[in-house]
Image 1 (spheres, one colour):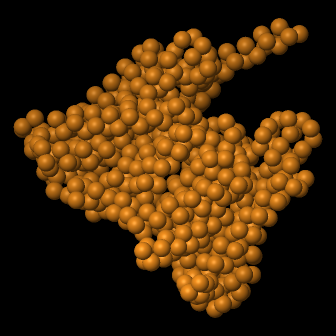
Image 2 (cartoon, chains in turn cyan, red):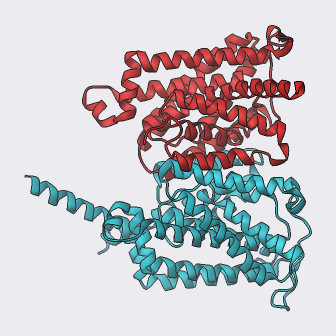
Image 3 (cartoon, one colour):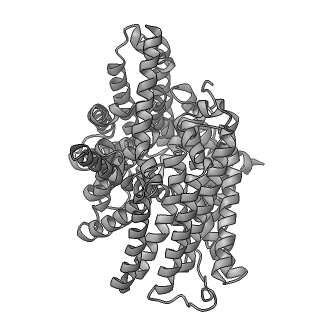
Length: 344
Length: 290
């Protein structure tokens, strides 16, 4: 009786693990991966040619995609729910802005500096707060973000405080491509950084390290039991994610040539979570679907109902949590699986 | 020396009044998080709606101050039962991410709705004539409104404390916070307990919103703007407790007022730093277990 029940539970657990992981495994191993990646790249190229007047908006989409991708590493893969991810985006944005004003207007070195400073802030704050779990962790992410916000707000002489950081001027990219008003350079620059960021992200997820953080998400106690240093793995994920978020923030500062305090607010962190869940968390391409979808919706809704659009975003969020927990990609996979099971 | 003393007294007084408002609003959140394991980021919505309703009742319907507060809290408490039954219940003790997103969605909806019905500007607080003046105690003047606030808050706190510590309902509540499954197994109807407790907590928040509308101005962004403060009270005080949040709210009220008065150039910086280290030192909060 006892043994039978044990075997039963084990089988059920195995089944659960399989269904939960099939999407991931399929995307990682399958030939479909190359196709999806190719399609996204093609789409980026097509939008460059077909929407020349929207280059600024499109580059914003790429920047937020990179930001949400970095959030996915924590929320989707490592299972760490954070309300303070905007802190790293903000650190990146302000570092890039200050670097351009005070040290050098050269964009690529600015990107490196901003990424490193965000990663350092991630490493230090992560080392402190990753010792906690659950709600306490959630609160601490919020606290860290609030501390960063207050520092940037109060250090007005350096950061411009509530007025934002003005006077960022960039030198041409690689010494040749001037940042123009049409946003052509911004488009190419952010698209290339996004692609590089994605390739790096994919490599991280596919590495043994990536599998370990997924294991920690599923069951941290068992991971510890089989010898995985849980705290250090999570800290590494946290640092990497913070660095990537910093890169995205730096891109925003460099292409907009202006940084406002809104980049470090809780609303920004919440918005990133929403974009992620729109696409689907822990699914590699979630950010690529969720961010354009969210920004498009925001644009459409705010055009038709300038005051009320936030309401519809909120309602959609509630409906997604109630009925479509895995986002657009989750619904897509479900339909695909249904189709496959029906047609062999 | 005299001026320092009087500024300390004044900061303490205003801080306590502010803390009382934070307590009234947050105590329900503490119970929700501790009892049901639910991260309710939309808790501030109850306070915001409570504030709007109370002010509208006074302004448009012509109810008196006290009656408007009671009616709006009861309304919000009853309405919150629907929310609890249809949206929250399935997510109890579940995935934090889903709870966070669902409740952020609700905050968004409430913000937009408030803006739609009441406009983007902060609402002007309305006080009855008897709460407007100053009382002179030991040759110092204290605004009557804040004294009333402190008196009401402490009374409600004592009642809550008594209910949770001394009544059958309180015993069931404490049992369910400690171990929900065992509580259920010995025949406590936890579903009913959850619903009743949730409604009381929401009603208290609505009362806090209305009563404190002069301190925390009622505006469409209210539920987001002050959320951090409500969460600090809960996290620092310890979830699922009635006393912890009281201590935390008073501390936070005084600390925040003191920071704004003595070192305005640092803003809320020290509040957040203090909270970070406090939570690292005691992850379950000041009076929390574990």
